[in-house]
Image (cartoon, rainbow, N blue to C red; front, side, top):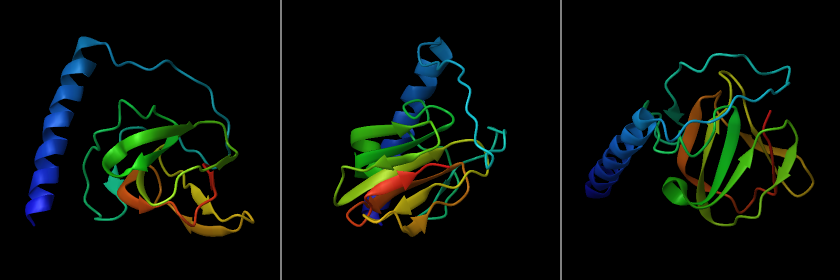
Length: 144
């Protein structure tokens, strides 16, 4: 319980910092075009943590551009970051516990694939994220 409270406090402070930066206009992302038949345009939803099921805005919204699926080598959106925009299979270099943010258009589901590109898992519909995810069995992510 103490670690959850501590994590919540850290996330809250970081969100406040990101909000300040965003209001200053320094964290804006450019518009991009993406074509994928499974994508539905609507960015007003509240993301949900796939592990805890708790709604809220993760700290990485500014770091993971809208319409991207982002993989992180560390838990809580730390470590190396791999952004995935175009609809394709992306190799995942991470092993062990990491995290991800499905910041794609509302309703988009990303697939986790093994070495033979067989589906071994999927995300909840976007927007969604996981603060702790085991990358070891995942060799590819198909982001759309």
